[in-house]
Length: 110
Length: 116
Image (cartoon, rainbow over the protein chains, first blue to last red):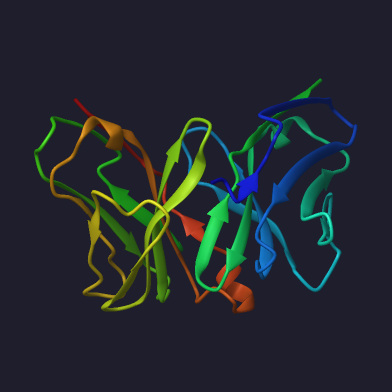
């Protein structure tokens, strides 16, 4: 049973616009929530995280929102740039275990 | 340069032939982990290790073994590979999860394994 889901396999956004990537989870015991970015032929790289006691965390163009009651996580990228084109994974941490979502491929077009 | 290295990067093998994928990190991290990435399934954790001689199962441990005899190394062993283990494998390391820095898992470049 998939505890962490990213229901949109792909997303296309124009350069300069906002990209919104979504993630849903079922386990209310997760402590931290993270976003990773992955380019082809490379390992994932950490992007941003949020603790379960917060509802928003911002780092430059990237903002992560957490809605615990809805068990929903989202990543906003503003403004989107062509270099943001990659696969984005959300991940949820409980104790020492990290559970990843299925990924969303973001394409930022000119 | 801080890095996680994996070898080999690509491997084609046959069913039943034992193989080992090595993973090494130079950041003195306590925590190391193995994941496999499959289309439509994302990354799934195979095994993780909190420190030397301490390992535990992730979500998909069947058919895999690991060992952690040294802090820097965390090899993944497939005793009798089968075609359903054809996948892209990633090793990662970090400080202990739960510490602020522990969220910054560093991933290796991946090993693409094909089992015929």
